[in-house]
Image (cartoon, rainbow, N blue to C red; front, side, top):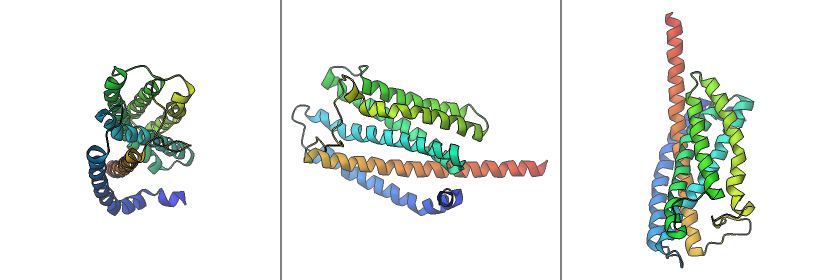
Length: 242
């Protein structure tokens, strides 16, 4: 069944009408979500308007981990099943995961200055998230170092799977060590610590961010499939002309 859905042409046919729908939904959801968060959600009791940055920071943090996990799953599928579309997915998600990790770190630093008195501290959560950003950038650099796509895919997949060990460190570092970063609050095993007026707009922006990632991933995958199809066609033309 996976082979059926992993066919590049079937993927292209399925996502052609889906992509514009996702794009429109993403724009609408972000307009609603940011208007809700910035215009109607009340100010936090102790942090005031500074806490509003959490409506960007928290979704970026959660979705960045999810995207890296998606990269790892796609990499594993490529190594075990050798489906090219799995590698396309992993490669396409890497810049998105890097962008979200950067947004998470940048917004966290902006929040940290008025809250902690500094833009940066070598906190376990912050350091492990910074490592994830460097890991993704390293993945992208490693892939670009190979000329053959198959070699790049294999090397990148191995590095991506090795980096999975960092995900639980990011997630549970605030529980394992004495860390300045506050524990998870939006989604926990025992329920959210957010009040309703903060939880609903935060979750809405989380869904909007997920929708945006889905749209960007599909668009990037489609561009990569087109690129590989063009290169394959060009290689066949060169061989036939010899």
